[in-house]
Image (cartoon, rainbow, N blue to C red; front, side, top):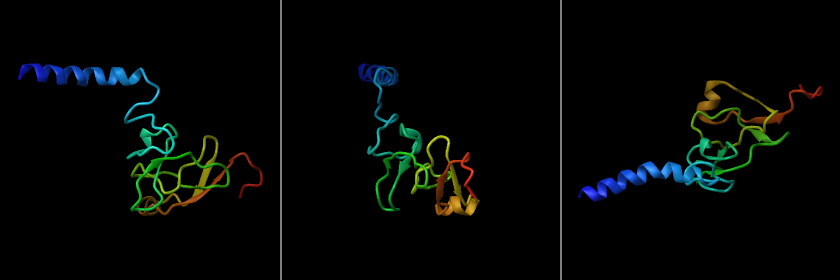
Length: 115
């Protein structure tokens, strides 16, 4: 009974060290299309689900003029946040965050035509 406990302890200690040797882990650094529970797991930073009943998968961040969500309090998005350098022009109220309905459009803040 002592041997399995030692073996379990060794595996728990070696697991993180072994996963750091690889570019992609089992839980973090997930590629686009892989199942996720939180955006922090995805390389892209967006764990996306199409609707409340679908499984969430890692997805690309939204490009300019694509629909977006400014922030998700749940860690999963119906619309991914914008790529770096773009802002999500959307309702940023707490009600929109709770109901996950605060969608907008990604815009370049440096664009002079931005309203």
